[in-house]
Amino acid sequence: MQEHHVVVVGGGFAGLYLVNDLKGLPVRITLIDRRNHHLFQPLLYQVATTLLSTSEIAWPIRNLYRDRPEVTTLLAEVTGVDRDAKTVLLKGGATVGYDTLVLATGATHAYFGHDEWEPVAPGLKTLEDATTIRRRVLLAFERAEMEEDPAARDALLTFAIVGAGPTGVELAGIIAELARATLPPEFRRIDTRTTRVVLIEAGPRVLSSFAENLSAYAQRTLEKLGVEVRLGHAVTACTAEGVAMGDVFLPCRTIVWAAGVQASPAATWLGVPSDRAGRVLVDPSLRAPGAEDIFVAGDTAMVQWENGKPVPGIAPAAKQQGAHVAKVIRAKLIGSPPPARFRYRHQGSLATIGKSAAIIDFGWIKLRGWLAWWIWGIAHIYFLIGTRSRLAVAWSWVWIYLSRQHSARLITQKETMREE
Image (cartoon, helix red, strand yellow):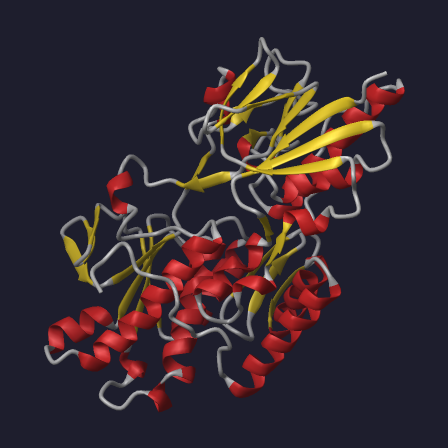
């Protein structure tokens, strides 16, 4: 009998946990991703802010499955799905047939109808995004050192971060510490401590998904670091000269977008309903509507939580969804009863503010400050892949904590968005 062919599109948390949990089954697996690496996204902001190098939070997918001969990895970009022919369409015209298809293609930045802002206000979803932001941050200080005009120098030393969710808060805290603690002894013509880091949020508070007292603590901590928090300000324009918030214009040369996400075009490929963010409205088993053989997981899927709210687009949710789809496929192949509907188990929310403060909301217990920062660090090191990565990240953090020196301040990527 021919082996069942499972095609998984996306090498993120959902895709990898699915492939891992299918081990030992009589299946042939094809894992397709347009990048050759799995990325530990929760620490991506630390690459963007010079704390970690790219190799510490990303691993080649082929290397992860070198001992799994039933897993074939393809470096390719999916452009569509032919449900009638049961094939995945690849850029360049190639196709891959499937018996079961799992789309775990993630999400990208959402500019709320203003995609023209992206060149001057990059988001943070990929390693390329992180190295672009890192380059712009470091180049801003270098150019300020050379700038004679005070107004232009002030604009170079102003950093605007749009969106005060976990990514925005984490970016703001680290950039502020970089400017105030790490760089001052290294520059002669500018005082990097005069740097302005402005966190812009349209809503009434930072970290709105956390309890109000933790949100208030996070804002106070940011302000102690020197971050200017502007709440209730919706961005109306992003240009190479700065950010507009209605009638208010903030001159700045470095903008980072952390305000929203848009799902991959999986719903369009399948011709199925989606929500406003483009996420597929899956059934309780995470199947696409009307498709017995197609599953959608991770940030691509719109899944209802028991409280009626959408399951958050975070790594633990994606891992649980990948594991659930594996259970459904396993049950089908061995002829056992299918598992109950997917139920998301919230394991808590975590966010850092600088190098020695964090907030944690486990529901039954809420922590903040230094102890929360240590718990956050231990949790993230635990979930990294491989002993080498855990040791490398732990050592980098210890070195930065003791010396205040960031270990990845290299300007290497060619800037394509602005003139050199």
